[in-house]
Length: 453
Image 1: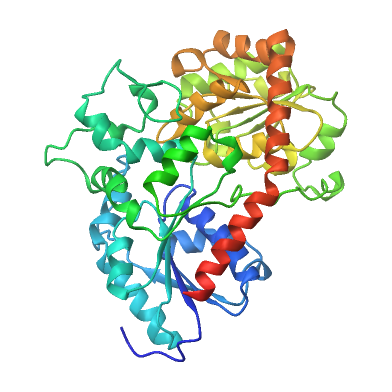
Image 2: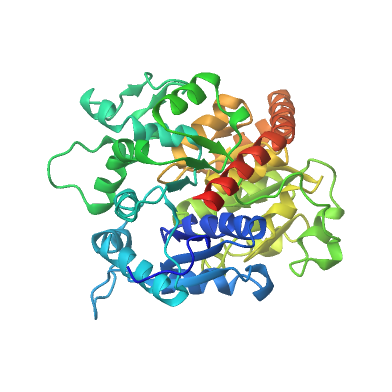
């Protein structure tokens, strides 16, 4: 790579994985680092499409001046039209690595005149380990999900050697409760036969590559893990830094005035009884099949439970005829919600979710029980942990029907067992609040690592 300025100037590059919420989480961490280390220059490497999406959701003053954005190729051939097949974009992107990442780094170095002094990346970009070694700089990957999910990838070879599949159970990973094979990310279960996709192959490499990292950053609190899990991770990784939830600042700032919410959700919640409202939100990528969407609507209508449903306009068109009119006195359907603010409102009693990591972390931080309908990736393992902690339930059979959701709503909001879930959720919230100082120490250790490299 081209020449540099003074070796005293620190230039940290972050390699984003531009899918799902990975890049958003990465940018959230980089903002915090840039504010904490204003003398360090940060380069954020991402695809044009992903960066455009990220910045469209941010105010200009949300991005510190010491962060600059650089484009890397998404790997999609010119003229190719994506078919919508699962992981197709991910496979094209990973086929282009590491060359696209190296090209982006060359541009960042040439433009700034500063050599890369530390390389941060998403864990899913395992090729970053080799890039960092070629540059002779520390590699610090970030893990955007729960630590228990990382363990599944670390133990991929063992899981495959034992032939776990179908109705099998994984009960040998230190610190994890027994997991059904179907609870694990499907890439963990695929046996190596030379036919794996780039995405599956990359995920299967995590366990063998990640021990080379100078440190691994977890967007989680160490106290939420079992002691055996913490011990096992520390025995396999050079350094583990639990810096707290990536998507939240804790302790949380005061709830914004309801009048400041343009969606009207907070004002609507103000009129509801404490702990009475079901908040329904399945994220931006998890799309309910039409049958399940109708089942959710029927359950909400029949139950009479006050609800806020975050539902995009395209899906809204699929709702049963008359649903919005019939539920207008006790329900509110909006295309976007201020989720963290809603979960912090005293009126919310349960979160019906896809079990995405960020959503569950936000629920934990506010002591809200959950009803989970996992979809893909790490959702099922996170849903299993919700049950293990006793702070919620998964929908029976993994598919929503009217009666199954009614049963869950009654259990969490109206049954004694639901009261116990609420108590356990509040207790977990207290664990998180008491662990903030420890997470701050780990974050400061991360700042030190990137500042002295």
